[in-house]
Structure formats: structure tokens, C-alpha cells
Length: 190
Length: 174
Image (cartoon, rainbow over all chains, first blue to last red; front, side):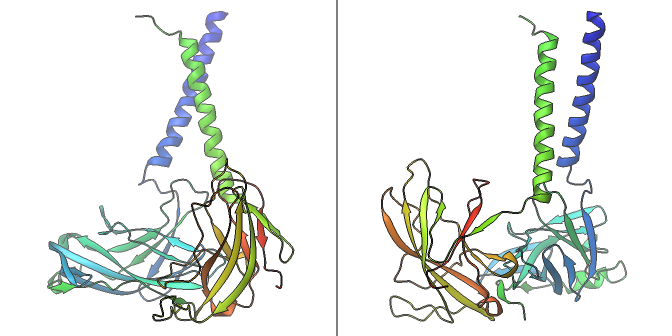
């Protein structure tokens, strides 16, 4: 009897541990999709929690100039994406994580702060910088979201940048010379 | 080497798992359902935050921030307006640190945090080294869209370290 009880405790503990580890894996696996994806295109505002996001411009280059001086150069290419985040609701808009997706290739932001935040009633425009490999930019998509680890309901915006397998080479050929991101600007939503 | 009894290990692991499951459930639930409760205080009344009594002496809006050294006035971002709150604080609880954290309340419980201001001001900003028993006057500067500047609800004394209701205080004539 004692033996049987002990075995049951063991089985229950094993089940509990399996449940905890699978939950932990789900929470820690960045590739596991546990968020809602909202798709958009360049030039049109995309509605998201607490506001709207718009990509208005895409530029490429090989030499990065910031704060009046050359910061870096690359054998690949720098991609500067102009995004405007508008906090249209009562809460601040906080899209502080961004990356580029192209098939299995993921590019993190070149700078540590590569998101857009806006206070209620304001819109902020920033240039987000990425360094990408010209051979892997087909169907390049900007993904922006919040980088909170635990959250009840998450949304991520994915905006197709208009780079297709057909025109990818043209983009690579254009990426020559200096590129200078602008400093962030802020204004009340008109 | 003495082996630990299996049952004791199982008990510790099970307790740890139970606590972890509870914490994950609570964080998720709180993230979905929690909205900070506010208490609107009468005009001129004080509020408590981090062991400190705080009052609003005045709440004014302006299109420019005067520079104390006579330099160029500070301008808000396009479409925005400055809101300057003059506050008085008196720390009375030595067990709690005063971290400021006041926010401006707008329509539909919009909250604005204090703005980063480059203009040198004659009045100090919120002091982080407030001594117990000392009463100080300071100002908090906010930038809000001009269209909301006539719909302000007061100053929320927000404190993320406690689940207590957040007092919203207003100046005597509001």
C-alpha cells in the first residue's frame, strides 16, 4: 500500500513537472507564436493596441552617418526605415522591439533602441536602422511589438516593405554610399 | 555521501511547481484585468505617496517655458502645450523612500509623465533626496496635446510599489 502511494506521488509529480516545463518552454521560446499578428503595407496606418503604426519611407546605404560623423560601414547594407507611432487611445503606445524578417533570416535592430514610443495624443516619428545581408532580403518584413516577456495579450505589427525576389537585386544595387537617420520628432496628433 | 529521501525531493519540487504556476497565472490575470483605482481628492486637499504628503499649489498651462538664465524660452512640440504643476511635499515616514512619480491626468484617464525639459527653471524639479520632516516646493512639467489642456483632471500620485488606491490631487481653485 505504502509502495503504491509512493508510486502515485511520483507519477503526479512527474506530470506536474512536465506541465511546468512545457509552460516554461512556451514562455521562453521566442519563436513560438503566442501573439496576434496584424499585417500592413507601407504608407497605410495599421491599428494596434493603444494606437497606430505607419511605415512611410525605406532607404538603404553602406556607410552610416549619425550625429554629424561616420559611425560605421558594412559589406552588406544598412536599411533605414521611417516609422510613425501614434498613441490614439488613452494609453501610451509602446512598440519598443523591432526586427526584420526574410524567410528564416531575422535581423535585430542595429541600435539598442529600435522601437517607437508615444505619449497619449502624440505621434512620434523615428528612423529604425538595420544591417542586412543583400542576398537575404526577399519579402523583407518589419515586425514591431512590445518586448514584455509576460503579458496577457500581445499584438505585433508586420509590414511588408515591398522588397520581392524580383526587385531584391535592384535594392542591393542601390545600397551604395552614405545614409543618415534623422533624429526622432514628436508632435500632437493633428 | 548521504542520499536525500525521494519523497522530500518530490515535495520540494511539487511546492516549487505550485508556486510557479500560481505566479504565472497571477501575472497573466493581472495583466488582463488590472486597472489602477483612483481616488479624486477635493480641490486643495493633499494626497499620500511613498510616506510623503503632497499638495498641488497651482496648475498652469503655457505655450513657453521661461529660462531662469534669460535664455531662449522652451517651446513644446508642435500641437502641444506645457502644463506646469507647482507642488509641495513633506516626507514623514523614514521607512519609505520618496521617488516622485507624479503624473498628469487627462480625459478618459489619459496619463502623462513629466517631460524632459532642457530649459533651466527657477523652481527645482521633484527632489529625490527629500529629508524626513522637510517641506519643499517643486514643479513638475508636462507636455500635453493642446486640445486636452482644458480637460485636465489633476495630478495622480502614482506608486507602482503598492496596490493602494492612487490619489488624484488638484489645486485649491480648480
